[in-house]
Image (cartoon, rainbow, N blue to C red; front, side, top):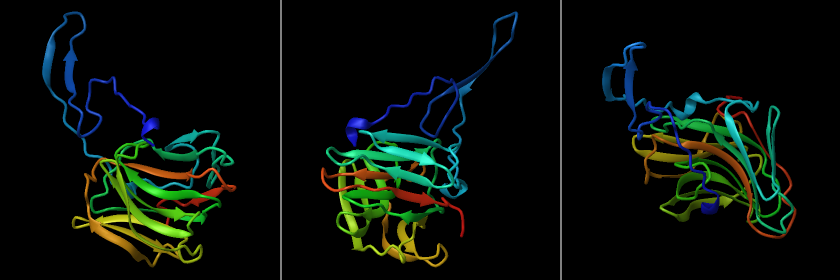
Length: 232
């Protein structure tokens, strides 16, 4: 994914996140004078649980690569192109969020087909593979997987045979320094696929839902998400 990283710059002279060194000042019109000059106060990101959506196109940035298609109309529908080349489709949150003591979950209505990864990801950058947590389905292998990529190295931490009934809901949550990757048949009762200590900062994350066709064979079909952080 590194080729497709997006660099986002803020041109405002105020803080837009915990890592931004902005400055605030006031001007008196008529006589130009600096009333105050001080570092802007950093504002903490909201918790991941505060973003809930049934996918009208208001809270997300949609993206595609190599002719993928993504649409929102009560459901998120992602269709990578026929795999003569790799293709990618999905969306990421407009804002960054904090996973600490919080959770995010989504209904996986259909995982699609072919050789694709369809997943819920929390990432330090929306279109980068440098640092992220992920739970999702590798349709080529027929496996539900939990994994992470830290400083460019991806590791599948655990995987089980994918069952579209038992694994209809996917969740990532954090409690007391541990990140949990969970699945559910009904979005109410959860089972843990993997859990481990957070290996990267979790207070400044984009939420990503995507479908990546990774192999030039087969027909990807359409993966469908619904009800992000919306309890059934």
